Image (cartoon, rainbow, N blue to C red; front, side):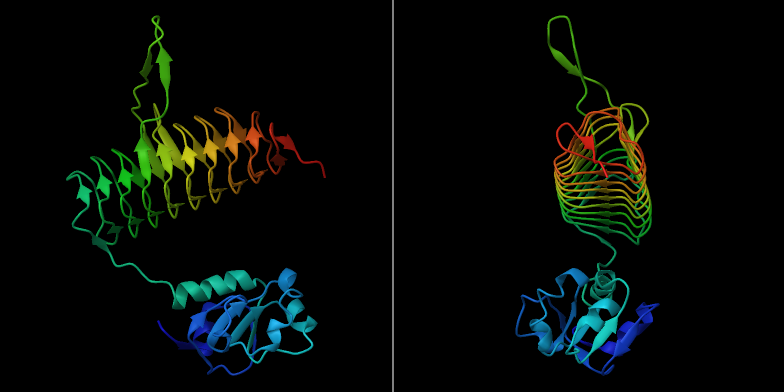
Length: 301
């Protein structure tokens, strides 16, 4: 949609207060660095960035999304304001509803899909995607260009996979024989991506030796992440760029694994825990704990 009236936003929201002209036309989304389009843009303001952007707020803004606290702190009120508890989340709702390009269900002609794979008609399969035998894909899934979904992977509904991902490849498991040569373990398992999982770009998730590597419901996996064989990632957990989760490790629900963190194999990170940026985790992490550093240690409150 190229433009819309402010009042068209209201059905998306539950708790809000609007001040201004609800018929004002919004044509784009902007930030405070993108000058010249503010008068027809929707923008959002956090409480922590109020002082930094106070001067800019004296300019006309098409629609400013902010908290009650920020609004009351302004001596000169913007012409059109949408007051909510979580401005960033509301701004994202607006972007998704009015600006995001929606994909159309389709299997691109360049995709290679094994005849035994189950692909509903509600999915999008991108250019040069490879889907091997026995793969089961749920409703309303998106698989981006050049991704490879190896045999017997199972995907729930609403799964999003970006570009250049490898899901279900063999893990890095080797045994050394008497002569010192290495031979790879046979990996008979698979990968399970539960409902509403998102995998961004250039990420590898290995299948288990026996059983499944599981990415649980609602988990989000960022770019350039490696998840080894037999790992379980809990519900609503975020694993962020360049992180490495070694084999047979279990990450609990609602965890935050920060960029470039590494977690040793066969460990358990409890529910609600945070692993800090660049942390190297060498032992179990209790629930609701923050660890950081190399080796990772618990943050003292």
